[in-house]
Amino acid sequence: MGCLFLCVAGVMAQGRKAICINEVMVQNDSNYVDDYGMHHAWIELFNSSFASVEISSMYLTNDKANPTMYPVPRMDVNTEIPPRQHVIFWADGEPNKGTFHINFTLEPGKDNWIGLYDADGKTLIDEVVIPASLTVGQSYARIEDGNKGKGETPAAEWSIRDGSDNGYITPSGNNIIIDKNAKIEMFKNDKSGAGLTILSMAVVFSSLFILCLLFYFVGRLFTKTATIRKTKEVADAGVDESVVTPDSGEEIAAVCMALHEHLNMHDNEDLVLTINKVKRSYSPWNSKIYSLREIPRK
Image (cartoon, rainbow, N blue to C red; front, side, top):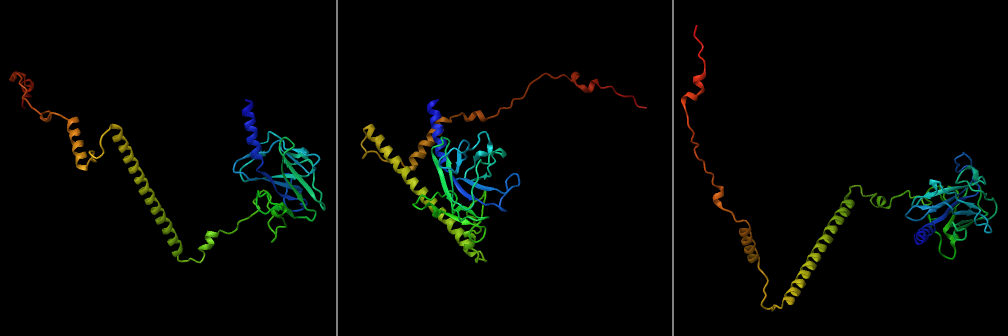
C-alpha cells in the first residue's frame, strides 16, 4: 500500500508540473466580473497537459516568505482542470466568498510577484513578476498558452495586452485567437475548385500507391518466410533438397479431389425412390355410398 501511495503521489506531482500561471490582470475596472458581479484582479491558471489535473491543496501566494499563503480548498469538483483548459482565481482578499477567491490582493503601480506551489508547500511549480507598468484594463499574458519560457529570458514569453492591436485579453480562453484557417486561405482564389480536385485526387492515388507497395512487400515477406520454414523442415527431416521438387498446382488439385472423393463416399442407389403398391382388402359393403339415405321424390 505504501508503494502504491508513493506511485500515485508521484504521478500527481508530475501532472501538477503542467499547471502554470497564464494571464494576470491587476487593475480590473470593466473587463471581467466574478460570480458576485464585482470587478477584481484575477489570476488565470492553465493546464498545459493532455490529461485532467487536480489542483486542490496547491498554494497561491504573492509573498516568497510565505509560500502557503492560500491553499486551494479540497472537495470542490471545479478544482479539477480539464486538459488544455483554464481556471480563474480572484485576488480580492475575500476567501470566504468561495474556492476561487484568494486571501490576498495585487497592488497597482508596483511589481507583483505571484508564485504557485505544490501541495508540499516547498516545490515551486511556476512564478511570474507582473510589471509595475501595467495600467488599468491591461493584462500580462503568455504569448502562447502554457509556454513557460525555458530560455534565459522567460519574460520574453509574456506580453502586455490591452484588448487592441497589442493583443486580446482572454480570461478563461486561449491567449492566441486563431481567426483564420490557412487551408481555407490557400484555396480562397480557387473558385472553379480545380486545385482542390487535383489535391484530393493526388491524396487518394498516393494512398492507393502506398497500400499497393505495402501489400506487395508484405506478400514477399510471407513468401520468403514460408520458403525458409519449408527449407528448415526438409533439412530437419534429412531429405536431400536436390531431390525434393516443389508441388505443382495440378498435383495439389489432384490430391484435393482424391481426398474429397475419399471423405465423401456414398451409395448412389440411396437416391433411388421405390414406390410399391399397397395391397389391402376391399369390400363394396364398406363403401359409404351404400350407407347414404335416399330422399323420396315428391
